[in-house]
Length: 577
Image (tube, rainbow, N blue to C red; front, side, top):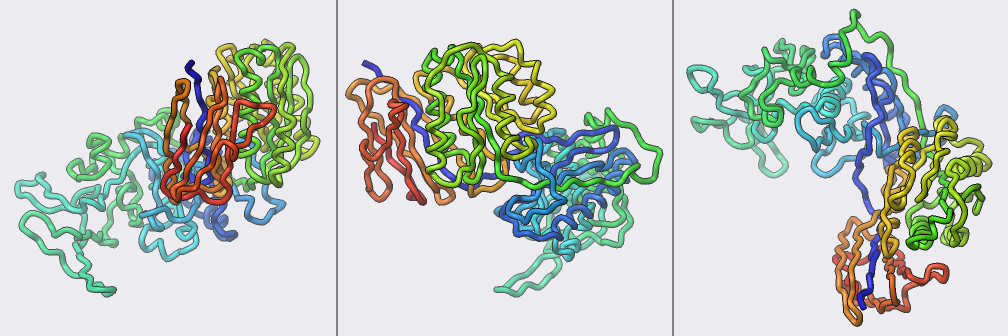
């Protein structure tokens, strides 16, 4: 007999890097609207961060207008303030905005970047970046302008990376090259334009003391470690992507001024095309026109938003089709994992079920401890019957949020259904006006295609799960619904999931790597489709956990879980079935 053993799942709280899930910024004629800037929850409260942010973007708007030849400016900006900062009557609730959709992140230094502003770019030429990163110190320390230039100019440099997919025209790795443009080969600084005036300097260091000296020349190039320092007094107008810190620079390099020889990223990735040529090929450029004005037509406006504790309603389909393919049982198992391990402490959670009508199974209540989580699990459905009325479920879900919070703005609904419903259009307006995000989970092949409209309208997640012998796929789907607040201490992530067939009396062995960045409140979940297997886990120090250490829920007897409080051992956990 072959028994499918599935859902070997490891969920751990650990430091997540920011991953953008879709920028909200859009071009309204010539002005960029709904630019989202998010302050990381780990950043200590300092009102000057907000003030300097606003000043930086205001200055950037003017500079952007100038360097794009009177075409673009920043019209409106939303700044997300973490809930770790004090509340303020001037702070509004978030709606569609979230940390993981931010265009600009304010967070402490990450690895080698120190206070260097940077844009995370995974794509090629003309492809948008993931996000722009500034450190709090960059915003607060005015002396860094001597290194990077005026903050607004730096912002425009990074914006060009982020929005238009252009690249640096200097190179820290290859600061000099041999130019062949003239009759006689010459050493040039890697920059745009060519022929910059400046000096080559080498820092000669002994211990903690460094003395600058002229670079040595070997007949081909300067010695390794030689740096080029431009003369700040020279009067050149370009280029933003290499020399934004020079006050005379007011242009991107175009085809006339571009240095196609320089060994920089712009030439390498954009096939020696100038930055201005790349920008002119963008959708932004094609969909805008030059303004007959010497300054942006309006000043940048700002909205201050503050992250709140999550308010989430699970709106779960219990119509008759959910009794097929073990769906209701898998729903119970996956939603149980969500309630016990995924949803963050201090979140508010309610449960609604729907068939032809909707029922409140649990009013909105705050998760303050494990007992509160278990109380919600007891309210999960175990029986399915009746028809499908999605709008009834959504209305009830929004109502229990409004009853407790006095608003639905910034709240979330997790809507799971496996059926078709021709009446979805009846509540689209309600959803749009609610200010809530709707995360949709389409279970199985017959789920209503119109479900996606809810996610599109509200900025929620569009998720799918296929039927299977065990709930692993649905559990993975629920695991994706995290807060997006940027607070790494409260987020969980699925580290590994395996679904394997184990023969009768057979064994399955696997190991799970755990490094020092992960491992807080680790839990293991195993599900099976036939007879219960024997299982044990061994940590790196040899401690073993047997089947009796796992918890099996009476309402869901095909799933077992083991929670390891505190921090799991670094290296690997060994699991045997």
